[in-house]
Amino acid sequence: MNKIKCGLDSDESYEGTSEASFKDAVVYDGTQGNNGSVPQENGIRKHRYVPLSLRYSNLTQSLCFNRPFELSKITMPIVFNEPLSFLQRITEYMEHTYLINKACSLSNSIERMQAVAAFAVSAVASQWDRTGKPFNPLLGETYELIREDQGFRLISEQVSHHPPISAFHAESLTGDFVFHGSIYPKLKFWGKSVEAEPKGTITLELLKHGEVYTWTNPFCCVHNVILGKLWIEQYGTVEILNHSTGDKCVLNFKPCGMFGKELHKVEGYIQDKSKKKRCVIYGKWTECMWSVDPQAYESNRKAEKKGELKKLKSQVGLTADNDDADDMPEVQETVAVIPGSTLLWRISSRPQHSATMYNFTNFAMSLNELEPGMLATLAPTDCRLRPDIRAMENGDMDEASREKERLEEKQRSARKHRSKEEEEWSTRWFQSGTNPFTSSQDWLYTGGYFDRNYSDLPDIY
Image (spheres, rainbow, N blue to C red):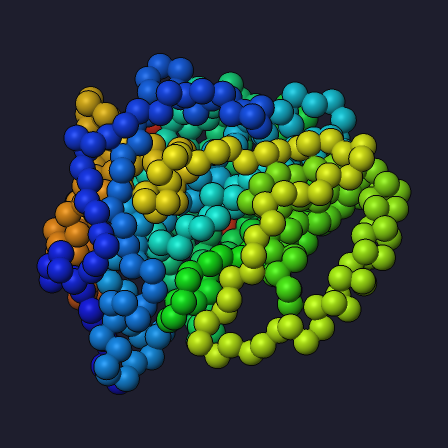
């Protein structure tokens, strides 16, 4: 079967779409959030947040669905994208860096694990309602971010195209921590939904304490890619291991369940090296995370079960099959706090008009910022310089679609040339190796990026 390609030929190809450009930019005032984090405003400059054009809600609104197709063989129209590269998307792990800094400041290993667990949950919180697909990075594409207000700098690189692998390395500006990993998102299509399996290990090193933590992210599923309202859930077990002390945190990201009461819920526990449960962690990855004594948690759980049994009996027979779409459960946005609990993390509020800006967080809206003078220091492979993403952010969907096709064709031509000349692709800032803590295959930073010597970088744009 031939691959179906349904790009956009004009603005008339999609309805209900608004456009915006840099002249419409607004500046976030940097006020303190209620989660105890460092303000998002940079200590030296303010980050601009740009209004962005809207996109389709699902496939049936734009695919040439009068022809038979296989979902796995479709080249997706650009309206399904959001104006960020996947390298920028994984940079959003760093939005709540203050939790790492907090872990560095704590003297108790269990308390440090609590802060690390909260960071691991917060790292995926920005995916809430983010149904847009980030642009696939081109081979050799890079992204850097320096946030002096949050005390870190980060470099990432697309180190492989088949399979697509993105490697990143972040480090504290004061030498307190190193955070690194490589991500290989594996997509599976299940008819009405798309499931992303985030293959790859994430490593956090707290240098002051000589501790190393590793984990993998939960599964992410986008429902109703064919018909209905798009919605997201994350599920699976995340195990965070402290390789130095033997402490372990097990977090269960729960699937929504029959009546949707488990949607967004996360529950788990921290145990020491003797496997004794030291605390229970609970909350929602879209809202907040709490810690409580295991006995208090069990007592509360027994009381809840008595009430749920009565409610379940009244709901029997109210459900019905729906072959057209997966109904999004009604979301209860409040976590019932168990008496004696300690707040570990609370999500930051999103901008007032986030729904019309790809549901971006304040942090996400700043990632494609290109300030005056930045061109003099940025690597020419930085995805801020990608013309298709920039055109989409400016609301020019036709230009974005044309540039995306041009860049993809340029990448294919370069790959054919290397094959003809029997040349191997050489990564610039990372090399394939073994993670020293997990013994698994990983991509490790070789250093040198911030020396600003970019003379041998490829022309990928």
